[in-house]
Image 1 (cartoon, rainbow, N blue to C red):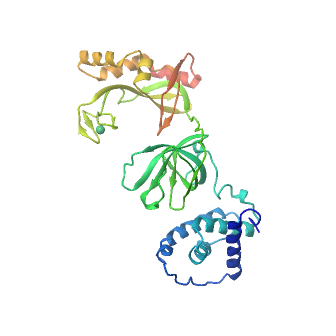
Image 2 (tube, protein in one colour):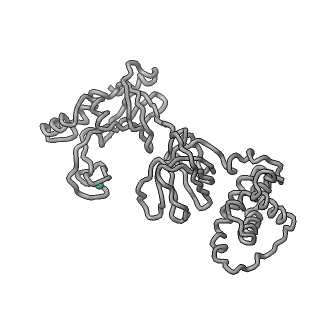
Length: 350
Ligand SMILES: [Zn+2]
């Protein structure tokens, strides 16, 4: 039996599980003095059970009802905490399947670096630092922000319904039973009601997951050049015809940016130059751009001017990926076409 020499608590629960396996009967749980807590955990237990069934799907032919019954017995009859019950039940199935825990990896889930997630609906265990917490945009969201590990960062979200303890910015946690999510090619992780959260007393050097892309600048999209942003605190949305989508008609503040498309002959990459990098790229400062627009009584002349000086040229840019954009931290102009195909693109775009 597992865990005999390691932890006495594990041992106790393993024994309880073994007893239960031996009895294997359909005993009803006797009513307890205080059963409200127990009934509240039923949905949780079912989710845990489905999860365990999935973990062993390659090895054992389990049903969620069977697994739930085992969990229910430990939790509601023997008052074992859910996490311990889960570990104990998993251990007994490992024995049954003749597997080492490593066969399931970590707490039974995949361990993948946060910046290396490339599958939807994958169950994960991670040790991660809360790099940033953002203001949730919906009442259903309890917390949203950025988790980081050695490989880089990824967005995380926790919903109110999962009823989880709050994560603190800057703290490091062991998070077991996260599930990945994919939206338009971008991956994030969801905390859910089965997620276990344990604060860890260590720091993590969060990796730099800057993207580097290169290619011919084949397009400068609308919303580039001289733009106006909403002046409301923490808003900074780009105004459309003087209106912020959140705050309505506002007196905007001028800014410069370029939303560009780099084509390397195989793929296109959308990149955003902020004011600083736009000024460096085009040699036009914000004040000069405002003067240009004033003279022409038209802000669009700025983007037109920028197109003339940059389209068809080759650049290598790097910076953090945000949604489908690479936010340009650094860029350099390349002298040569990336390859022959890109050269054709340059020829067409001039
Ligand atoms: Zn606004």
